[in-house]
Figure 1 (cartoon, helix red, strand yellow):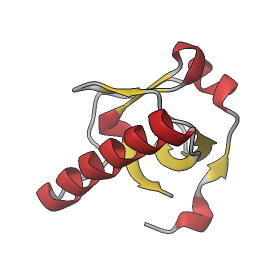
Figure 2: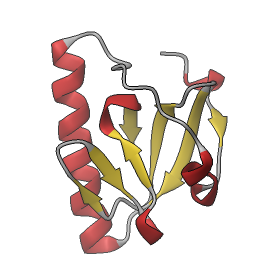
Figure 3: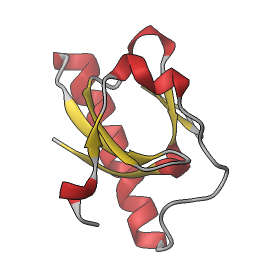
Figure 4: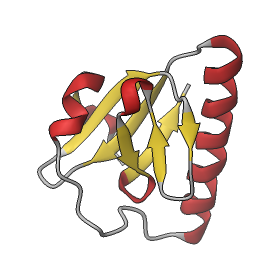
Length: 95
């Protein structure tokens, strides 16, 4: 993954994006690591309102958003104001 190829996007723009049903990662270890990163981001977000960068992909291109994670379900990352990103479209999470 080349992080430089991810376009910055504002959290408020995410609700206008379309997300395909396909998984962006193809390695079981990467998928497990992504979940661990999301759980850590959730803890930091809830305890300290710590912002992280989420690298994800919609139906057009790769994007990155800097935000606080408010919740994580089996299928979605929940941001402020009910904005969601499907977990299967997240490449990585960075502190």
